[in-house]
Image (cartoon, rainbow, N blue to C red; front, side, top):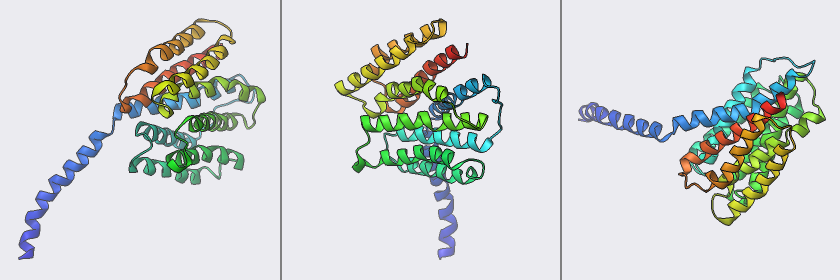
Length: 261
């Protein structure tokens, strides 16, 4: 009797399983994922490589493991922020960077590994509500580690040393994270506008201190438009991370291009 029931049930269960899988994949905003991850990778990789080209020791170093790590870390950041720090998918992606570090530890110094692991640890900590980091403190923690993690490691991989001028030149990158990610950590109310205003003014003054050219002007226009218009748009949660990451990438790449000329 049972042998007759099982074959008839299998065809019914298979379409249901396939429909659940399709529904799961449809829930993932693939275009947003691609745009956000690409923008994040440009933020991390472009400037260290541009700066390294100006140094006599600078040369392209092939490191597919580091590139793979940065891709999955960018994916982790996207899903963490795009889903407002909730959901099992976040924790799945949070595990991947830690696993990838196993393939990097033989190629790097302990200092580099510490820099790489601090950002995933911070993302885990931000998830824990009892630590109360889904606010300005989490914003500062994430911004600082995002600035000092991949860009510094990439620069060291290219040159086998660090320079104080390079670290100081990362200040616009730090301020861009603080400004553009404000809406992720402080999404509503007067605190959002005040926090964005403070960090926006700091970023504005930093840009104004740079030599003037067309790149500087466009970066200023994007910055001012973001504070006056874009940050007040009632964007759906699923679009916020991608939209503001692209704006950040555009601003910081324009600053980097200005510094490269």
